[in-house]
Image 1 (cartoon, rainbow, N blue to C red):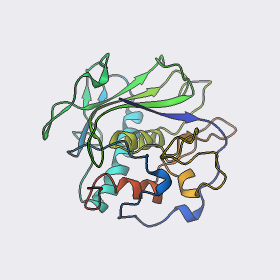
Image 2: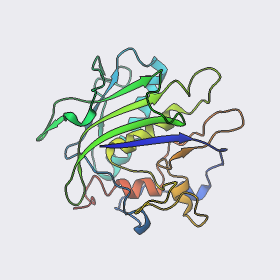
Image 3: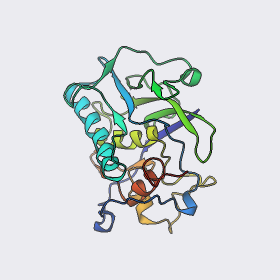
Image 4: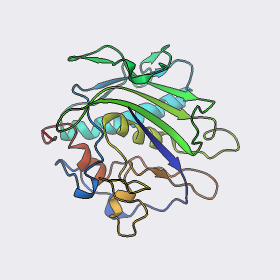
Length: 251
């Protein structure tokens, strides 16, 4: 089981023009990011469902926007959607399912058929010790080569410490773009502790596109507590994403 968080910190810089480039269509996994692929789903698109009654309509629209950012990228590079939110943009799939006590005790993928969905929950009381985490995606991999196979995942958004009056306000679409990246199998572009297979986020020599990736582990905020809008997949997100799905994926 893996637990992947997105954390709050710092001030929001402008994204340089050098990070806004054409779509990358090749698998590009830099040697210093060799450990940053969590795994992948054997079948796509991955079905998701929003917990009924948890999100307002504008929030649901943000979820769909984020899913479509990944779908648009993979449509261009792999010719397929990777996230299936069901229904249409205005009425995506919802569910009454509850979060299992042990997420990885069961899967939602049996052979080549999905038997459930990755469920998205709003947590008004954050059940984890780290209250700097804006969101958390729990994923369940089975070891395989060259990449583990993901068989279940759950996504939780922290509405105790963010998104409410008096607290910091992240850009919700940006948060979901990041979390969908985790759901699909991408780890952070760097690690604060510099663990093996990850560049250290505090390394002054770290490439800029690691910092400006949507998969960077920290969301900057401005002086008013408004989170940076970081929705566009940059070269690093795209190059690593192509290693997971499509004709140039790792084999």
